Image (cartoon, rainbow, N blue to C red; front, side):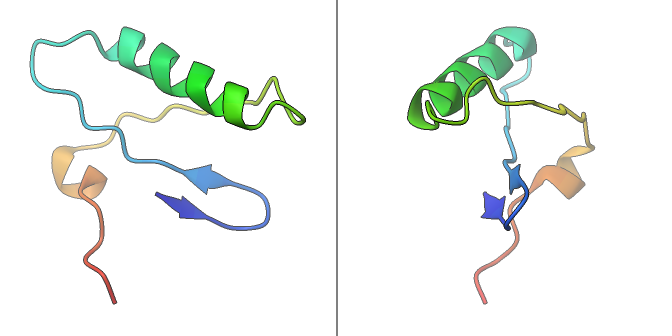
Length: 59
């Protein structure tokens, strides 16, 4: 997870064979609930190769 003043980037890793759309819905509904003052939020889902989706190592 990475945030700046305009965006929140989240890497969602879904096990093979699982329902990606359902997982996106779960994450988006939770974020909308936590950010209720700003909800509904806009989500721009991007499918990335696993090597790109891996979290960066801590500094």
